[in-house]
Length: 118
Image (cartoon, rainbow, N blue to C red; front, side, top):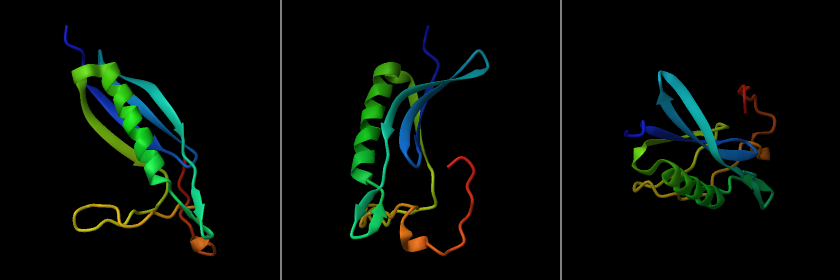
């Protein structure tokens, strides 16, 4: 019998990231955390940045684990992040600057949106 389609979600939180597989079986959503990894900011010249190279490496590892677990039934991948940051991209969608972490002091004194769950 063919395995039901699998969906991979990456949740990049303030202090950790995780890869979660989801499947729909018998009308129920089944979730399985397959990988968890640390996610902490990097301090450079008194500013905090996301460690995008580390996150990219960890996400590739999580994807490898998901493919091992699901084979050809993996049909989708999504990414969710905590924070209101952005990453500057050029016209070819290449990263052109390291994204600041939302905990960086550049926003001190500004009114902040309270995000539940982050």
